[in-house]
Image 1: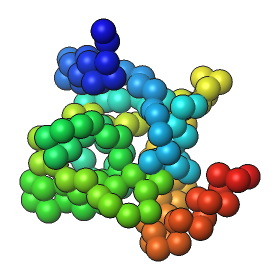
Image 2: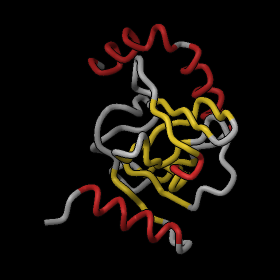
Image 3: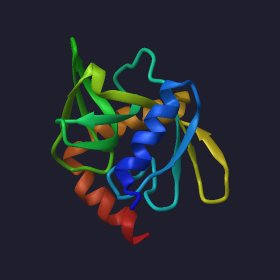
Length: 142
C-alpha cells in the first residue's frame, strides 16, 4: 500500500537529485496562500532558506509539513502554517527537505511564491496572527 509518507519520501529523494517535483497539498494549514485539495506546490532543493520561505520539512521527528519559516535561530527552524491560528513546529536546519517555489492551481496555472506582493502579504498576514481566526472564518464562508 502506498501511503502519503512514501509519496513524500519519493518526492524528497527526487528533489535531492535535482528534479523539480509537483506535490499536491491537503488541509487548510496554508490558507489563504495555498488552498489544500485544490492546489499543489512545486518543490526544489532548499538551498539557502530565509524567514518567509515555504518549505517541506520533517518536523519533530514525526511528520512532514508544508509550512512557512517564521524564525531561524542558528540551526533551529520554527515553522507555522499560514492558516494556523496558533501553534508552531520545530526542526533542525537539516529537517528542511525542499523549498516550495510555485503554487499550481487546479487549472494548471503557476504562481511564483516570492513576488514582492506575495512576500508583503505574507508578512502582513503574520502580523495579523491574533485576528486570523476571524479573517479565516469569513474567508471560508465566501
